Image (tube, rainbow, N blue to C red):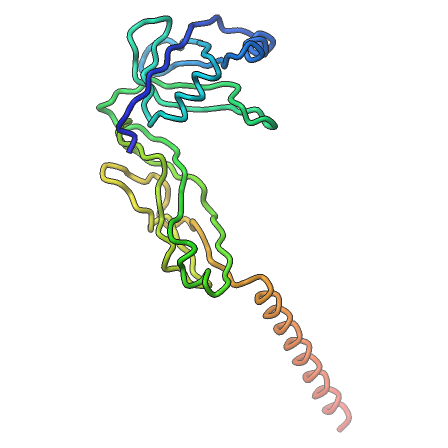
Length: 217
């Protein structure tokens, strides 16, 4: 659970065009915006190194202080990354009240995959859902939601209904959404398809032969 908070000191900035934002990034800063909570949005800048460390060690809640003012609780709403280097290029933080639930997107993780009967038979595990939307108090948002896949056999599909939700956490997605499937080995599937095709050809030839016989009588 994200029961701990992290402090983040930022400096306010003027809303600027993309050229100014690029200069900020070259200087080692990340631009961002703090909004929500019935207050005006605040554009800010923060050292990339400091932001990286804060996000790596924070739970859901970040105590944001702008220009040394009293900190306000916020959560990460959006994080834009460079498409090649992967570094953070912009962040959106939204103010929250710690006594009111919020919705958040968290990762979906599967446990026990390697121990499942299907994997031991050579099956292929395919994760269909990577993230889920949950609702909880800001201090109760987990880093991820888990699904136990240790009982899956070849041909089995698991839905979001199998998600293991911590107390106080509500899943907002439809429960019947397929989350993962454990399929037969690719070679086996191809062999079965080939047998089906050959069986179909044999059947067609047999039907054709019967038709010729009938025509010759």
